[in-house]
Amino acid sequence: MSNSTKREPDSRSSFELALEELAIVGGFSNTVSLLFTGRSADRQGELASMVHAKACAHGRSIGALTRSSMFDHSAIIGLARMIIECLTMYGYLRKSTSQSDWELRYLVLRLHDTASRIKFMRAWQQKSDYADLEAGREELIEAIRQNSTARNLPKDKCDKLLGGESIFVDGMRNAAKDVGWDSDAFLAIYNYFSAHLHGAPMSF
Image (cartoon, rainbow, N blue to C red; front, side, top):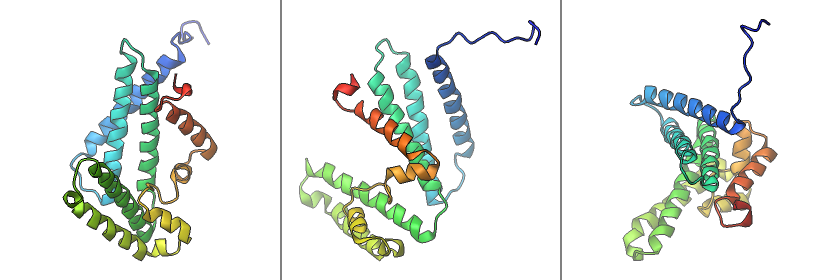
C-alpha cells in the first residue's frame, strides 16, 4: 500500500467512536421511521413502530446528555437500558407466531398496562373513579383464561400471567434470546445497567 492511500489511525477515543455510531444508527432509524409514517399496519406493526420511535428518542437523549457540562453517566446508562428493552420488545412484537400466541402476548401486555394504571390511580382516586379499569382487568383475565395457548401452559405460569405483573409471556430473558442475543450476556449487561437506576453503590 502506498503512502498516498494509507489511512491514518483514528485518534478518537472508543467513546467518541461509539457516539458517532449511535448517531449514525439513530439517524438511519429515524429516516426509515419517517418513510413509513402514515402507512397502514396491523396491531403488531403499530405497537412495534411506537417502541421503535421510543428507542430512537432515547438514542437522541443520550447524545444530548453527553454534550452536557455535567456528565450524568447513570442517566446515560439508564437510557441505554431502555433502548435494550425497546429492542427486545420490538423483536418480541414482530416475531412470527400463531394467532393464539400473538393474542396471548397482546392480552398480557394489555393486562400489565391496566394493572399498572390501577396501581397509579389508587394513590389519589376513589375506587369508583377507576371502576372501569378494574372491570377491564377482569375482562382481560377471563380472555387470557380462554386463550388456547394459555390453557396449555403450566398452572403456576398461567397464574403468574393473570396477576398482571408480566410483560413478556416467557420472560424478558427468553424474549432477548428469541431476538438472537446471548441470554447470559444479556442478563449480565441488563443487571449492570439496572443498578444505575437505583442509589446502590454500583451506580456511583
